[in-house]
Length: 310
Image (cartoon, rainbow, N blue to C red; front, side):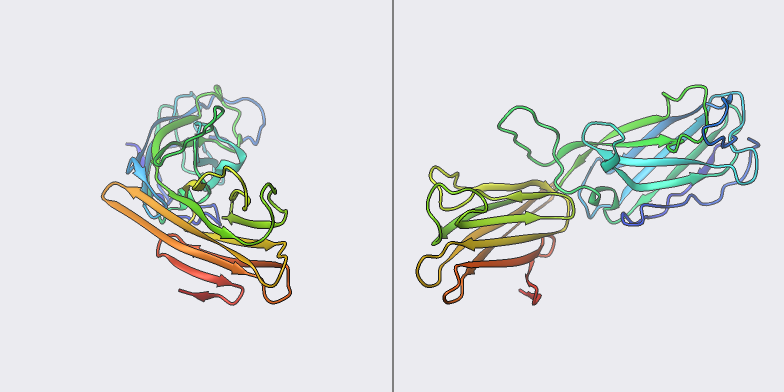
């Protein structure tokens, strides 16, 4: 019978999980890149549900690993190989897209035998490894409207510890619709600087940061500016940092303000929040910087570093 094991929820920070013990069978050697073997591990099935998810959803990952070679995998105590799961926009295992779930398999898998896994990946760990999630775009304008089609992948023997008969059949991918939050900004005036400046010059600049990506609003004042700046078209982090900088006040105090809006359009759950950010210089100062942290899930805005929240 196939050996079936549960996945346990894993932290994206720890980037590790373990399979529970599942005994039976007699079978691969972990050669650590050593001499060729007659082992051939492949993923014969891989599924994820739900098919559309945001960072709060628990994903159910299921699949089967089969040894189609003629030599047993993990025949001795201490033998193991690694299985890695990732999320990507293009169906590849790339360095910055890897790490939300890595597991070791130490159970024997005889020739022709299978090893099945099924279990939840909780609390959005699979998605929070990303920031702003959008498919690559080479032709302007690049419009990213959630949900964006992503790809969840699994790679057996991801550490390449076993010299298999065929290394090209270790992958399996399945699509998933990734639902994030659209974040936009509308300028409501800037009393510093002159028209025509760039980001960092005199005027008003609004910068957005999450744990992965950053975005800058169009420098103000400017001519022919779009009415709305799209900052994060499909943001997956639940909290972002916003920094409003005012430079170049000429006489007395001056300032600037922006309205920021966060919108999530999930089937059966539409939410939108709007906050006004205002920053002004104090007295004779010609520069000011104001920082906020915004909880996109609960609409909680905190000014930093005093951490006053509303």
